[in-house]
Amino acid sequence: MHEGGSRRPAGLRDVARIAGISVATASLALNGQPGVAEETRRRALAAAEQLGYHANPQARALRRGHTTTYGFVVRNFANPFFLEVLSGAQQVAAESGATLLVLDSRYSLERERRHVQELAAQRVAGLAIAPVGAGGSIRLWQELSQGAPVVALNWSAAGITGVARVCPDTTAAVGLPMHRLAQLGHTSVGFLSAPRHLMADPDRLRHFLRLAAELELRPRVMYSPLTIADVQRAAVTMLSGRDAPTAIITNSDYTAHAVYKAARGLSLPIGPGVSVVGHDDLPTSELLDPPLATIRMDQRAMGCALMTRLLGLGPPDDYIADVQLVQRASLQPPAIPRLRPAHVPR
Image 1 (cartoon, rainbow, N blue to C red):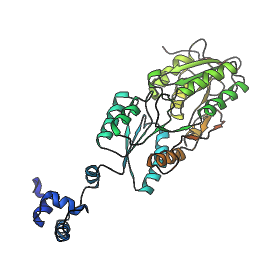
Image 2: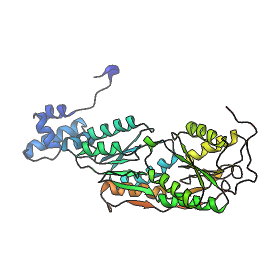
Image 3: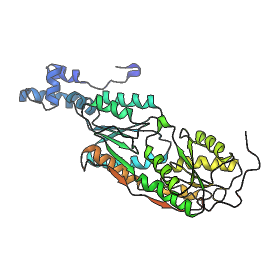
Image 4: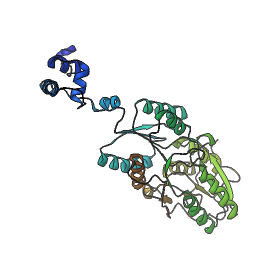
């Protein structure tokens, strides 16, 4: 009895005691393993039923060396994009009898590494990860997991093999807004990127710089940790400078909110004062004032593709999601002359 008079749950030792057998034999009997006489197995099952004993399926799976639990490490659960992806992944997992254990690295390389070590120690069946940086935690997983599958979400760094990737068509995701901005008369475009050591999709930046040269647009790269507060500070600095761009392409609708806040703090109207383009088309984006132009993709389909590959139920190749540019009022020709804030906060 525990304190307060509560009875502890029956354990395997209790089953063995009632059945008059060893704990090892009780375990073999209840798990359907060979080497146990039928009469002994019946006694063990009867004792388990009498005591209301139920084996812990996770512990049993670990003892057998396999499990139906999979890990999913994301880099920023505050971004609703990951919730949509998780919804699709969970749908496939539930239909397949698998369980997803979701962890948030919060853009910390050290926290991400600890999560991967813990998942490997628990011997989960596979890992889905939206990694931070160039993929050091993916290498760590491959070292620790002895061949368990890994699928990377929104990651394009080179140098690691044996990884299935699920990501949007980044060439189109950058090219569509860049061409449209050039058509609208913009000559200087800002581009939001994670700091270099945290950048998981360097191909986006490469496409941006290449297209800026082709379209004769002056590129401005805004490196910032991808939190609302950090992006807002970086955007204030960029938009209050002498050579401020007339448009900013962000990496997500989530961080586009921070650019809105920065522009409003500078009395700079979104659209004519500075065009803003998001990425993901969250359900709330068209409700912003003005509505946010953005890149649309099917996040649930990405989650389904991720989990299908993790479970080995589909092709092991990469999944590249189609994208389209959703044009809304945050995307406009630049004002002539350029509207500037009357006062710049210091």
